[in-house]
Image (tube, rainbow over all chains, first blue to last red; front, side):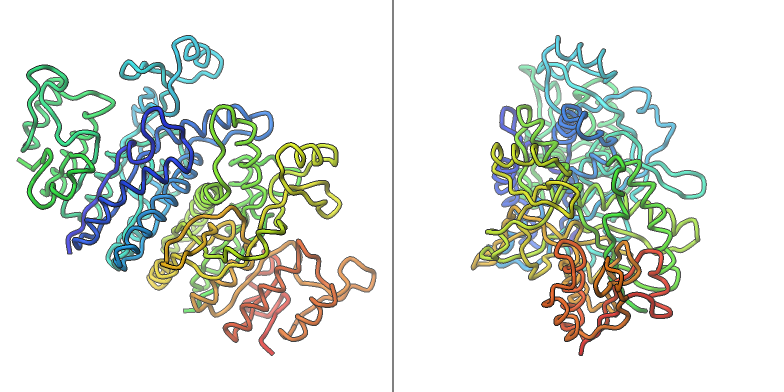
Length: 313
Length: 313
C-alpha cells in the first residue's frame, strides 16, 4: 500500500470571481474529489491537505465588520474554524464519491495543530496573503485604520498579509498515523495547520499566523513516511522562465538544481516558490520524490511520470 | 481500561454575562480540563463531547451582520466551524494540562457528522435555542425580517431556535473507535455533530439544524461501547420538583421511573429534560449507567456514586 500526501490548491475550493458560498465550494470540491477518488480506488492511502487563504481572510473581515456585536477571534482560532468548514466539505464530498464507486475506505478530518518557533522571522515580516482583494485606496485606508499589513498581489490589487512562520512539528501526528494505518483517508493540516508555539515545558499555545499549506504538507508527508508528496496547482508543470516566450517546462529536477533555480529568482514568491521549496524539503528529508502538477494530471503523475518531479540529488 | 463519554455543558466554555472571546473560553476550559485530566490520570479512556448553542448562534448573527460582504454559510457548515474552534481550544487546553502532569495520552479532535432523518418532525418545529438573547421587540423584528423562529427562553429573553432532529448514526464512528482503542483522548461530536441526511444510495448531505449535544453524546457513547456516560451540568444532581421548597435530589433512577417522571413534566424542556432522556437512551441501549452531575463532582461520580445515576430497569 502506497501512502501519498496530496496538497490541493485554492482552485479546488473557490475560483477567482466566484462567490465564496458553501454551495460553490461544494460543487468545486465534487469535481476535485473525483480525481482524488481515482487515487483511492487505485489503492493509494491518501492524506489530503488544503489551504485556507481566502477563507480565513474572509472570516477576519467578517468578524471585523461585526465587531460591535461580537469580539473577533485571533487568527489561530479562525484557522481552526476553516479546518472545520473546509474539512467538513472535503470529507463529505470525497466519501460520497467513494460511496458511489463502492469504495469502502472511511474518510475523516482531524484538527491539526502545527508547531512553529516563536522567534521565527515570519512574525516580524507578514507575508501570507489572506482574504479578499482591495483597490489601493481601500487597502491604504484599512492599513492605517486597523494596522493590518498589505501587499500588492500579482497585479490583482491590495491584499492583507499575515505572518507565515516555518512549520516544525505536527502535534496530532500519532493520531494521523494511527488512522492512516487503519486505512482511513485523511483530511489533515488544513490551512497549513493551526499554528502553535511550544514553551520550554512542552505547553503549547496558539499564535496569530497562517502557515503556508505546502510547507505544512511537506512536513506532514515526511513525518507520516509518505512514499510520494503531490502538490496540486493550476499548471501541469513548473516552468523555467514562466510566462516568457521561451518558457520551458521542468520534468525532472534534482534538489540541487531546484535550489539553484530558486536562488536565481526563477519562481514567483507567492506562488511557485513555496511549492518548489516544499518539494525540495520533502525530497531532502525522505529521499522520496515530490511532484508538482495539476489536479487533472495527478493520476498520470503517479502512473506515467507527468508533472515536475523533484528528487534528492 | 474503562471507556467513558463525558458531555460537557455550556458553562465549561462561556458563562452567562461573559464576553464570547477566545481568551475567556480558554480560561474557562483551563479549569474544566483540570477535572477531566483527573479522569485521564485515573486511567479512563475519555471521549469529550460539547455543545455549541451560543457559539453557532453567534456565528449566524455575525454572518448576517456581514452579509453584504460575504454570503452567510448554512447552519451545517457553521456547526463544522464550531467543531473547529471549540475542538481546538479543548484539545489544546486538555493536552497542556495532561502534559503538566506528565500524562502521555495524545488528544485529538475528529470532525463528526451525525445522520438524522430528513422527515424528522424537528425540521417542522424548530426547538433548539442558539445565539444571543434579545429583548422582545428585537426578537419580533428579527422574526418578521429574517423569518427566524424564536422562543422565550427561561425568562432570559427571546432567543432564536433552529431545528433539532434526533441523531441516528455517526458517520466517523470507525475512526473514533480506532483512535480511542489506540489510547487517544478524543474530542468528538462537537455541537451535537454536523447534521447530515442519507439518501437511498448512501450519499450524505448536510442539513440546517443543531442536534442536541446530550442526545448525540448518548449515541456516540452507545456506539463506542462506553462503560459509562456522564452528562455534566450546573448542578450535582437532577431534582424532583426542582426549584420548589420541597425539591428532592434524585440519586438512583431506573429508566422506567425516569420515563414516568419525564411524562409527568418533572424536567425543564430546554434544560434537564434532554439530559434525562439521553441518559435513559444510553442505559436502555447498553444496559450500562448514565450519570448526570456537575463538573466538580465528576470524579466522585466515578468513584463513590455521586450524581443522578440512571440505570436500566
